Image 1 (tube, rainbow, N blue to C red):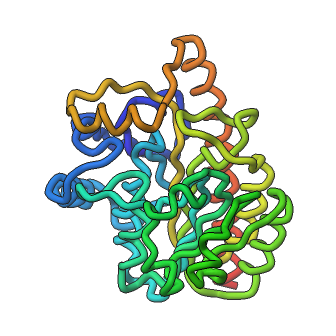
Image 2 (image 1 turned 120 degrees about the vertical axis):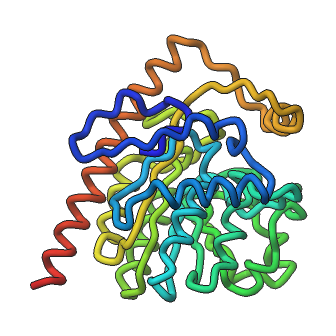
Length: 294
């Protein structure tokens, strides 16, 4: 547990180690400069054990921390990164890195073969936001979008037909993804942002997708034999930015105010989902390791 925002305080597992990073919340939450990012990456690297299981990171405002964790996977050449997220995380951010741009950073890592972003329903992939998407990794085949009900005419017009797969519903997407995951043995890093889920499953502070918990469990089941690392984000927490540009940019995302009673209830709901995801990843991972050693 990377305890950046206090949202995971109710997590109780005997196998869960907590790393206190609260002093970094203001500096890296939502986004940060390259200088602050390098300082945080160095600090985190000194605290993380050489080997560890799934990593919990708190709010989806910290999803760019996944880039630090994936960078530590350098021994796995040809790494396939699968990101379950309602947003492409491949958007332009001129000030450094942020929670919506980190996928482009990962796609440039030499040991990463491809990033597949699964379950996108966000208008971020629509034509009105086309200019905000990093196009080069899409053209090079380093990033691919798996969308549900999206309007992708602009991608076809630019010759990016193979950079996205669009589905009518979540069930069709998961079925196709499971088939694809079963067809290769490349090492895989799995990153889950729970904003890919319906609000009925888990509330987040971002606009949300259409997947159900069973959909994520099915993806984990298919990916398990190949998983070399994983993380989970998408908790709900409240933070009042002191940094002016962060207050301005976060306001543009129209993140709603959360009532205290809702916050408590939603965090409890999130913990239940976390437990199910952790159980699936650790149990499937153990089974895969046993099978490999046999």
